[in-house]
Every structure is written in structure tokens, then in C-alpha cells.
Image (cartoon, rainbow, N blue to C red; front, side, top):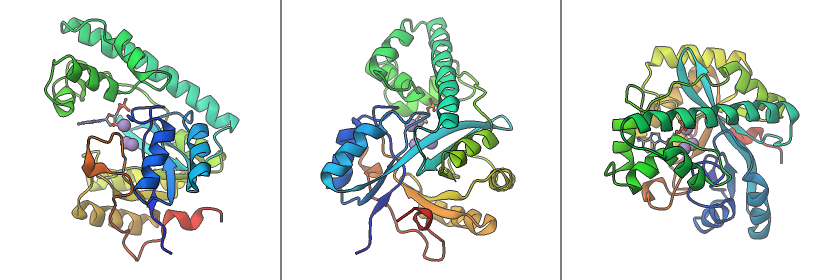
Length: 278
Ligand code: AMP
Ligand code: MN
Ligand code: MN
Ligand code: MN
């Protein structure tokens, strides 16, 4: 039997709409056999997800999506098969979480200056116990009808160059890779085509990533086109990285990003799961 993998998705522990439990149930319904939950800068959803995965008989990979800053750019590094209790990782996560909270307050201050008050309190309620992300800000702006779509919230307020953008110095690329590797995991550069950076820039970053112990690249991503798969494949070949695949699912109301709805990895690449223990 060929297994269906989805190695990138989000729950309410960060900016996903579904609880870890409901997310695992939905993955199961979509025919996913091996699921990695990869919330932004937190492992808090993994315990609940694991219970449900055991209940349903699907394999859960302990995952995370870490933000890092490399040469002034924010990159996302997915960690797969990490030990979520590793002390070095935990220490790194508490720093990232403090940065997220500080940033959220500053984003809210900037929105207040634009005549939109009280947003920090609102996103705090809405994110519950989970990490606050820009998604929560976008949802608030949409809910309060300051914008007509999530995209507009990013385009008018939250993206780089917009009035509520706050530049953040996340941990370095080398640091986040070391947290993952020291926690026994595999570091994967997430969605390489989504940063709008030149091939030359990405190639240089991948050399640093590999030197730091990074092993994989996300070749298939739910939002990507076939052309993007082809380009990501070239990065994988050039840097001899294993290939990962993930929907980056956040919420049920965006069906084109459904869990497990992914094209096959190019057959010439080594899949990241060849590095998973049996
Ligand atoms: P943060 O890590 O807090 O900066 O938040 C980044 C998250 O915002 C990403 O993981 C996406 O889930 C979401 N995001 C970024 N750009 C967009 C966009 N244009 N439309 C919808 N969601 C977005
Ligand atoms: Mn997200
Ligand atoms: Mn990402
Ligand atoms: Mn993601």
C-alpha cells in the first residue's frame, strides 16, 4: 500500500482553525496515513494530536515550523520527527514565543495609530492558548470589516512596507536548524518559492542551511504550482536535499489547501520519510 503523507499543517496551537484533535480527524477522513503537525514556534498541539492519531490509527510525526531571520529575511524551517521535550528546543521556543508576544503588541500599537484600537486584547482572546500570528490580526481586521479579505489585510496593513508591519529578529537560520537537529529532528526549508527571493539568494541560503545540518526542502506545498515543484526539485538536486511534501493546511474554508491533497513528489528525489525511523 502506498502511504499518503502530509508533513505540514497548523492547528489552534498557532494559526490553524481546527483543534489538534479535529485536525487529525480531518486528515484521517482525507485519507492521510502519515501526518506531521507543524505549528508556528510551538509544540503545544502535539500531545492532543498524538492521542487522536493513536485512536484513529494514523501515524503522527512530531513537527514544528520555526521562523528564522537570515540576512534580514524571514524564512520558515520545518522540523520533522523532533523530540518536543528536548531542553535546547524548549529554550529556543520560549525565546521565539516572547518575540511573538512583543511583536503582537507592537503591531497592535501601529494599528491603533491607524485608528484601529484594542487589537492586542482581541487577538489574545482569539488565539486562546496558542501562539499569536499575523493570521490572527488579519482575521480580526476581516471580522471587523476593516478589510474585505485576508489577502487585503496583509496587503494593506501587515506585509513588509505596510503601516502595521513590525520587523522582527527571529533566531538565526543556523540556530533554528541546530535546535531541530539537537532535538533529533530533520530540518526542512519550507515553501522555498514563497519568499519572492531570487534563485541566487535561495541557493546561497541553502548552502548555509546545509552547512548548519539542514537536510530537506519542501518540494510539494499545497499552495504551489507544478512549475514551483519543478523549481524546488532543482534546489533539492543541486544541494542534495531530501524532499518533503505538505499542504500547509490552516482552515477548512480554503479547500484548495485541503489536507493530503498533494501531487506526488518527483520520483527521482529521495523522500524525507526515508529518514524516519520505522
Ligand atoms: P507570522 O509568522 O506571525 O508572521 O504569520 C505568518 C502567517 O500568516 C503565515 O504562516 C500564513 O499562515 C499567514 N499569511 C501570510 N501571508 C498571507 C496572506 N497573504 N494571506 C493569508 N495568510 C497569510
Ligand atoms: Mn500560518
Ligand atoms: Mn510558512
Ligand atoms: Mn505553515
